[in-house]
Length: 108
Length: 309
Image 1 (cartoon, rainbow over the protein chains, first blue to last red):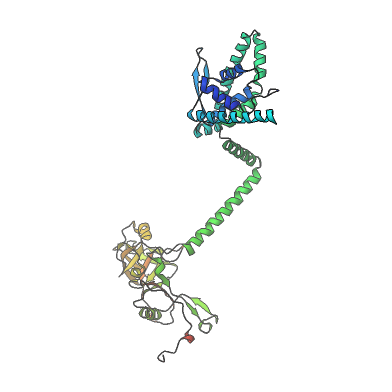
Image 2: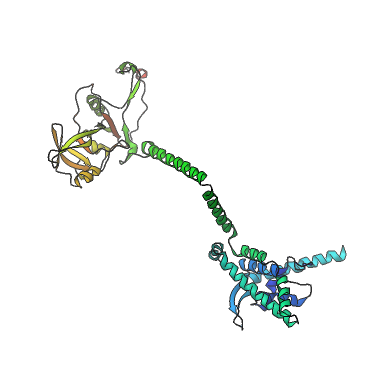
């Protein structure tokens, strides 16, 4: 784990969002996409792959082996219908909660 | 992921691990390439990428948990462990297996006996309507001067009972000799054979509703189907059997082994009742007519004297 785990708890949400927007993607690409947004968002491999496999297990994303241009076997992840529904829900909750936390921080 | 693949993953963790390994290897390569593109040397880039990847074993474990039926996996491991321990402590294992075996065997034997004696109905139609007569012999009539239960009657008594319950029940007298006796069949060339013989009063099989497997069940000797198969290969009818000085034609084959658990009668002879009222050797069985119930016997002295009602 990094010294500051900014992604604590929100990694599945980000993975779902990235995979929905840019998928199908392999694990490394998911990392670079998320990290591309901010220095603060550092995706640990030790968290990413278990998270991917749990999401797959829950039926929220789908994994398929395919080949790169260099004939390399990679596992590509894409979102499922259930994943889309969950993403909408989690996005709403995240926005509501962070707005509430922001309010507390400003006004308490 | 389907349940099938989860279960497959439990028994072949290698497959899931190999796939994860491949995925990780690709990730590592990509990371190395990107670090090199930023200007690092290969060796340095690989070191950095590996450091970032962290503990692969832990990763493998976590991912495996997500991908397998972990609880089943735990069961499999427990079973393996149990077997290993059993193999290590051979004496204890042997003792446990032997005592378990004996206990299970004893229980099975006891149940078989109870089942045969108490639970299983007689192998006859409507066994609920069959009754057997018994009596309590007062002490002064008993040869041992003790009140005793008895289930045998003399032939004259049987005839009296038969008359008394006419219309309510049909009675049959059985002479269960309960032993092996020498007989001669006419196809044996004078050689005697030892068989189990019992006798049944006329019409008795009809009362018990024993099914005839062949022929008729009155007017001669009747053999059990079991015995007919064993002794005659099926064709028993038409043979003659000599018991002592008497001869009987075999007229039928009964699909019936007898009324006593664990004892199969081979040959049934027509019962010839002895007129001697003291020769109390016959069991009396009966079949109640429809709607007739057995009432509890009432002590004699409580009845009003007959004729003075």
